[in-house]
Length: 405
Image (tube, rainbow, N blue to C red; front, side):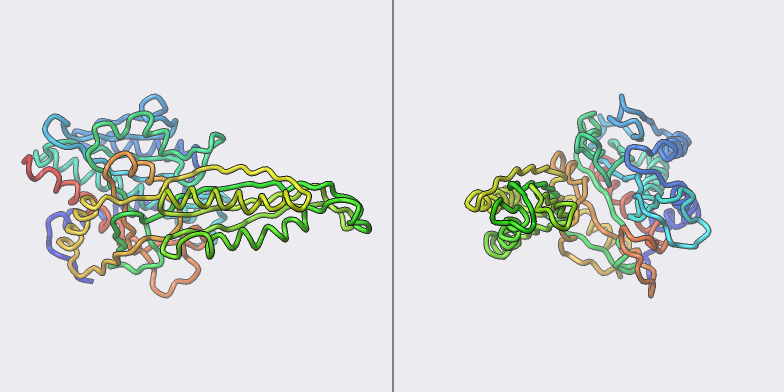
């Protein structure tokens, strides 16, 4: 694969082995959302070794007990650019057999956050060196964010807590990347506008009287009522939402009864709704409620609870354009896929609603390796992606300071 001889590429590849060591350490010792204490300690230790780096950690300064912030530069001299890396792992039993396999049974970095963290540290090292040479006329803020994957008891992931604590105060633009094991090295997904989905969940309970299974006519059967509701629910996407709009409604759980000869008195269902546009988001909720209301006409009642999760990731056109210019300059042979990333969720969407932001997906797939996609027990990456990602983020950040140099 051909790279340019750009100085930033050379600097990033000079630290390739260090980045691999970072990534493998975090992979060996994964920690779940809101529990990333050892991970945060390691991040803070590495940041404090860098010239000019000011470090904040803990709940008071970052909004989360395991949050870490690094800053280099002076905000009075120019813009403040944020680079975000998520640091948590997933409750998955790893099935890989490499020597850096997870040592925490049942927990695994199966979404590439170990790589994101390593790249974040690499960018911090590269830009601290640039600051030392007085090439940064402004400030870079490195946000190492816990809890991207899962919500807490308040229904919140890590990003809202950090935003509330002020980590985006005075930030002019923010950037992030994500591993893509479905793309090979040398390809990226880059897209302006809505690129990942609003993630909302719902739980509904349909109630009847229940009764003896041999005498269904003497009561009302919520299981039968659900059979009437289901076609209406699945018809929302095809008949109630414009085919030009991205939208999904899926049911993931149905629970009813505990005996073969007892009609239960209630049935519960759980599911998720995905969308890009906020109007479509509200439309899905309204149509869901209308579909369930059918049970009132056939002798039942219902209760619906909707929880709004991460907002859609809305990539800023100008930040995205800077990333594209960097990729073309540093890696001119790279193939850029200019398309949305899908209807998965990403809590970087919270930050993108606050400041101009952009996330891109970077190809990290290992050729001919199967069953190694995101959130899978055999997830893995081509570690050559580490210096590539670091070079892209570091150089793009520097483009914001050219006019102030």
